[in-house]
Each structure stands twice: as structure tokens, then as C-alpha cells.
Length: 435
Image (cartoon, rainbow, N blue to C red; front, side, top):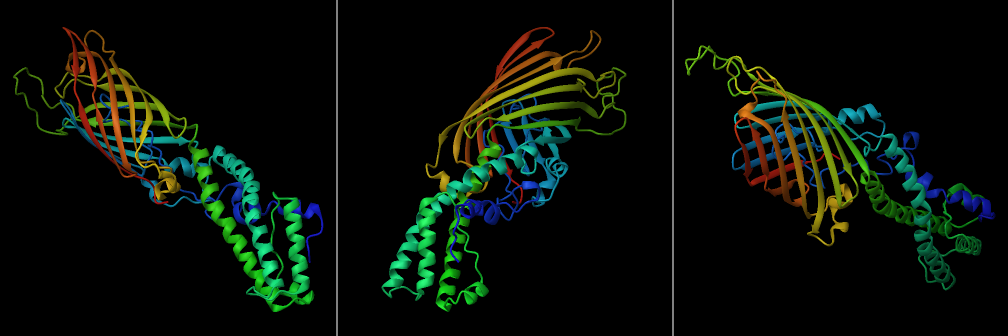
């Protein structure tokens, strides 16, 4: 009945790997082993589009993100929703499913202009991405032996205590001499191989065949339960957390999408209030744009993003205001500066999604250039706009964030340049997926 060879012990060191953890398809962690939770993707406070592009930005990665922003000149109401994140993450979903999960809709209104957009994100921090599967295997393998060492140290102590109690007739179970001999052999082998895994694998038939007692069987069954519970506790907490952190660290998100923006009057009869023989409500489309964004989350403390824009927009709804080409760029960097809860590592929000109650600081840079020809009209007569926005953001919980920023803008106009400073206040609500 005793485990007699070193080779068997070495094989059993895969206990954590095969019994408690890896049951997923193609070596991927599954809901039966590592939790497939949504990570809190916006923890860095990244929002490169704080001023110029805040209505058309698609740099949001949660189930629901809402922005209500008040500033000196512009007010913004905005919601970005990824409806497919309402579904639970499935262990069997393909990478195409993961890509679809990040499809998002943008609805915004800014100064009477309504915007509707659609975006797609490739995210290599998804569980079922190639990177996610690789990290799952690496984390499991690295932690399986470490978990064995933690469990065995406690388990050896328990076995020795149970053996001594049984010899003195003080234990709950009265163990036979054969059972005590078996337990002693386990202790010796685990002391010689502390990284090995022990699998209590005998069933009732084995005990009957070896002429062991019912107390031997009940004790062995209890032993199995304690070992399994201890192993699961370590894996569910420590291994899963390590897996989430590895997924998030040095992860990349690439977002592609576009928006259509409309004047507040979509359709009407011809109107010519200024008597210039031009219909004041000729056009309903204000602008259309495409964007491609890159976000790099370096680690838990900081990250950055860069987004390029191509836009076509018109100066006004009046006739003869054709769409003019624009190019733009935004970039941002954010840092976690202060932690508000020093015990965050034991909080439910951190264990489930890596959210840390904290204060973030950073700055965003935005640039927009009108490329209209000499007969074209740039909106508001502005040829180029540059904006730099330092900000501070308070993240109290995963759902609510509060941001203060001071955009410093410079506008190059046809007749004169103009520099402006306009503080804004932004409140954001963010909800992750169902998991």
C-alpha cells in the first residue's frame, strides 16, 4: 500500500497540475481551475482623448463606460458599451469569440453634436489568446511545485501528530499498525522529496483487500479531503492572482473603429436665415472618422497609449461646406501615484479583477491638423490645434472614478493664434463583464 519508489513520487508531483488545476481544453485554464474573470483594464487611468477627441474615442475596454464631462467651453455626455461582455466567459470559446467580445458601441453628445461609433479591440490579455494560454501553462507549472512545498510542510506535521495521537489512543480514529506503517512511509518520502505531490488515491476496495479497518478507511478519506481543500485554497487564491497579474503585465490592446457625428438637426425644410441664398440645414453629417489606437499596460503601476485619427469634417451644416480632411494624434501616460487602501491585496476587488483603490496622475497630448485646400473651410477657422492636459484621477472602486484636468490648448487660426486654458471635471462610471 505504501508508495515505494522515487519515480512514483516524482510522477505524483504533478498532482496540482493534473488534479486541481489543468482540466481545460488545449492546456487553457478553465472555470474548473483558474477563474476566467474580466480584468480591470482601465486601472491606469488611460484616456488619451481628454479634450479634442473625447467624443470619438474608442479607448474603453469595460462592459460599460460612461463619461460626463464639464469644462469651460465644452460639455460631454458619453457612453461606450461592449454588449457581448454580458455573456459569461466560456472556457471553450475561440480567439474569434474573444475578439467579438471586445466589440463596442460609442454614443456621445458634445455641444449639440451627436456621435455614433463602432470599435473593435485585439487584446492579448484575454484568457484564450495564444499569450493567455502560454501564461496559464507557465504560471501553473511554476506554482505547482511551490504549492506542494507549502502543503507538504503542513501535511507532514499533521501526519506526525495523527500517528502519535493514534499510538496513544487519543485520536478520533483508532488506526491499525499497518496503517500507521503506511503513514510513516509517506512522511519519510515527503521529507526526502518536499516538492513532490501526495495523492491519496485508494478506495474502499483497496482497504478491504489489504485487511485494513473501517477506521483506517475513514481516516484516509478525511485525509484526502483535508489535502484537497488545502490545495484548492492555495491555488484558487495565490495561483489565480499570479495568473491575472501575468496576463495584465506587459499586455497590449489594439483598437480600430470609426464614428459618424451629426448636427442637432438631422432633417428639415430649406432655411436661409442669413439671406445668402444657401440652405442653412443642407447637411446633417458633421464629421466621419477612423482611428487606430495602441495601449500598452506595462505593469500594475503605469501604462501609456497612442491613437492616430483620420477625420473628414465640415465647418457648418450650411450648403457649400464640404467635408475637409483632418489628421490627428493623441497620446497619454498614466501612473498610479498613491494607494488609498494599504490592505488592497486582500480585498475582493483586487483578488477578482486587480482593482486597487488609488489616485492616478498623468498627462495627455492631442493634436489636430486641418488639411483643407485654399477653397476649403476649416471648422471655426482653426488650422491646427494642440492640447496638453495634466490630470489627477481618484479611483475609489471599480465602478466610479472622478477626474480633474486642465487642458492647455493652442489654436492656429487664419487670422490669429490663440492659447487657452480650460479646466474640466469628469465623472466616470465603469462596469466590467459578468464574471
